[in-house]
Image 1: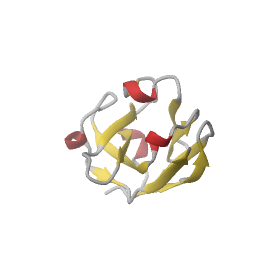
Image 2: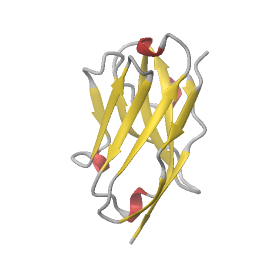
Image 3: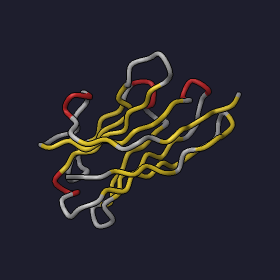
Image 4: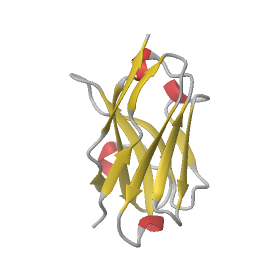
Length: 124
């Protein structure tokens, strides 16, 4: 069992930056690939970025490439999402998730555990 707690969301102006953190419980964090997803009302949850267990492999959705960076610190059981050059369309609830297995997984159904989400609001 893995429990995930996101933090770092908030209100920021367009062009600004935020760093989201996701702290995981348990001693098996390094055995899970991690992902960040986001969801807005009335829309499907979508992948933002993912990272493999070791951190070597990463994946980014096209709409965040060059602006967001996913990273992890296995010693701290934490995964991060550094978001820069934020746009109003980045406004969403952001979720972190943990997936068993290798690689950086892109699909929602591949993830086993989910956090409660953190709201990110980007004003224009």
